[in-house]
Image (tube, rainbow, N blue to C red; front, side, top):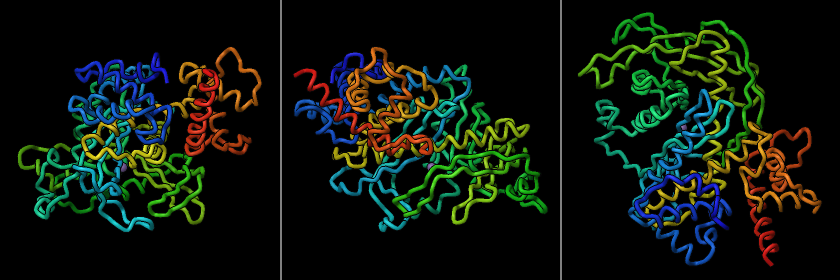
Length: 477
Ligand SMILES: [Mn+2]
């Protein structure tokens, strides 16, 4: 497709690999991938020359995943600036490439054993990303990405686990990323949201030190409000301490459908009512933190917000979150806002789903881990864009669609849905267009159907691609 004025031209206007041809190749690759999501490089790039150029791009030493993400981040920061508060959601995804034994440089990753996973160790890459999301749920872009091959810990490393400073551990990735993006937004409040893996004293301390707040789901039932770093009598653990507080009100949470192929769990979507308790508390440094040897580690003033499902339906795992934050939690309104923001953490899970089940990045054969890292960076931006388009219909429904998608897409889409009624001169609004795309994917749009899901939309996008290609061919005939 014609690259002039394409979204990728704009998104990567600041990219600099030190070679103009590589810069424009990135735009071409991005456009072809977003025109035909879920296809291999060979299918996406029209013709042999373009395919060869794409392979050369990923193999070139001058190109890097870091530069791809950096250029995209500049635009993400501009998008974020329009918001008073944004959420920076960090999470790790494991890209499994076990099916491609010929790929060089992959590390070992462990995958939880489940119904369909027999082998616990697989070959693949670890990708830690930060997705910026507005407080009404619109994905604004990737703020940072760190994709790497994991070295399997030796027995020796395992023994030293407790004496290794955080800077030398893999979990340092959470801190490093927080530090990297926190200074980019002078006038926007950035709240970092993480799951239980980030429940680490060092993470909270860094957050305090640099003044960049976090919300993290608690993993450790630590003793709270201690007076010293040593064992104490009569101290309460976090869950006991918060459990004693009174419920200050209830809040409704939309729990998405759970359908995990990996361990075979299935759960329908539901609206859960959660009770909310909260309190301030002092978080003490863990006794075994190696930094005790060289410095005095402070207690941290934190708040805990506890959300627990009231009357969960039979057979479901009740929702239960203990959230830790260094943002002020003075009343029920503050507390429920933190729960609302934590719910938006699901965005990054869905985003990874777009990347893996939608764009099928685990099927790419580039033969080398370094090339895959760059490929994952490009696809991450393509996935962000598709994900943003499907959600903007909910946050900014009135936006004219032509500010976001090509005429070559919405025109044939209109004709397909309206059975060749003449298309309007003015571009329809984005919420209608997204609904039509969902209908191509099998969405019936009845009152009881609610919002179309990401899988339905995905099927729709793929069909739209074919329809649009046919339409362009017919126009040029
Ligand atoms: Mn995680």
